[in-house]
Image 1 (cartoon, rainbow, N blue to C red):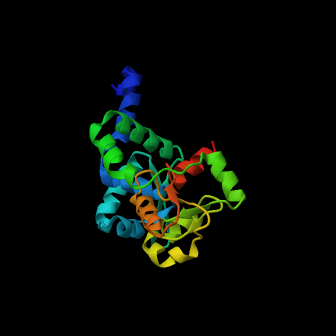
Image 2: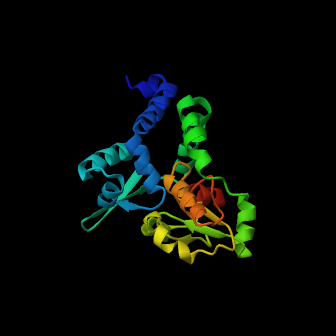
Image 3: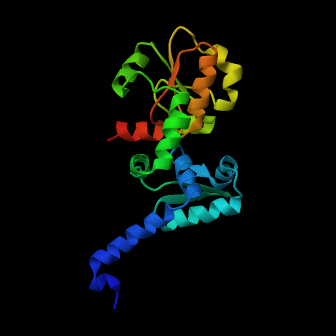
Length: 218
C-alpha cells in the first residue's frame, strides 16, 4: 500500500527530507548562491565555481529533482534559475541557525571575517535616504552580468578584480558602502580593506543583493 495512504505525515516529511538532502553539499549551496544573483548558463556556473560542466550539471539535476531550480533551453544554451524567491530566506535561515549553534561557524565569522571589515553605520531605511541625498556611495563588487541582472537602486558597479585600478573614480569626500552576493561573500571584505588603504571611509552591508531584493518585495 502507498505510504501516503497509510501515513500522510510521513509521506510529506519524506518529501521535505528529499529537499534537505539536496541542500547537503557545499557546491550545491554555492550554485544556489550564484543563481540567487541571476539566471545563469551551466557553462558560466562552471567557470564561476571552478568546477567541470559535468560536475555542475550533476548538482543541478539533484537541485532540480528537489524542486529548487528550474531550467530553460534557448537553442544550445541551458539556463538555470531559482524556482522560488523563498529559497533566499531558506538559505538565510540555515545560515542563522549555523551561526547560532555551530562553534566553527561563529568562530570563523567573529575571529577571521568580521574584524576585517566593519558593518555600515546605516539601517536599510537610512541607507536609502543617504543615497537619495548623495551622501554615500553604494558599491556593488559582483561581476557585471550579475549587476546587470539586478542591483540595489543607486549602486555603482566595479567588479572586485577591477577595483584597484578604478579606486580613483570613487570620491574620498563621502563614505562607501560595499555589497556583493551575500554575508559570506569575501569580495566585500576585500573591497573594504583595499578602500581603507586608500584613505576612503568604507564599510560593508550585512547582507547581499538577494536578501535586499527579497526584503523589498515582502
